[in-house]
Length: 136
Image (cartoon, rainbow, N blue to C red; front, side, top):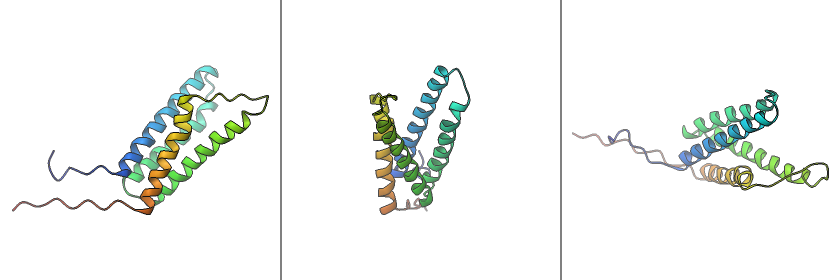
């Protein structure tokens, strides 16, 4: 790989990959829900919207936009609040909540990891990469 195209991987790239994993898991869960709910497209509306917003934020985070970091943190906090609401609602006798390892990873661990990394980027931004040295 030539020197001008090489770039150091940083925390923004880690956030990007974690957001891609989150989008993939969300879309896979949406497909399963569609399968079990008879293919009603209304069940796809929220997951597809969240995936689109997350992908836009992921692309902007890699470009170094601080506003996108704030948006990602807000989105992850909404995800954590939704998980907490599911746990609380599951305590009601009429509703059921079954925690799974996948649910804990995608609903708690992944949002916490993304939030912590984004907050670290907001507090201490990554330095700009040095321009490539020109050979004379």
